[in-house]
Length: 91
View: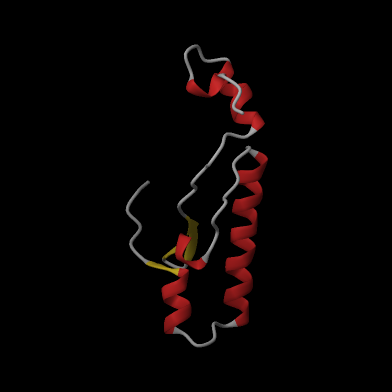
């Protein structure tokens, strides 16, 4: 992951008592689109919170995608690769 020159959404929320509604809606819309894309590719973020949203030049970046288990899509893809540790079913 590249270095992000900015702050977390938590830091901004702490600094500003109330963010402008148009800014909140813009950020939420961008986050929803990013999460929809991730889900469509089989990735689920299991710990989304303001501390895991970085703001760089006003653009939100979702960080800390800790995947605790592979999705069925990832298992199917990895099973085609010989020797992959994801190729075996988990219990």
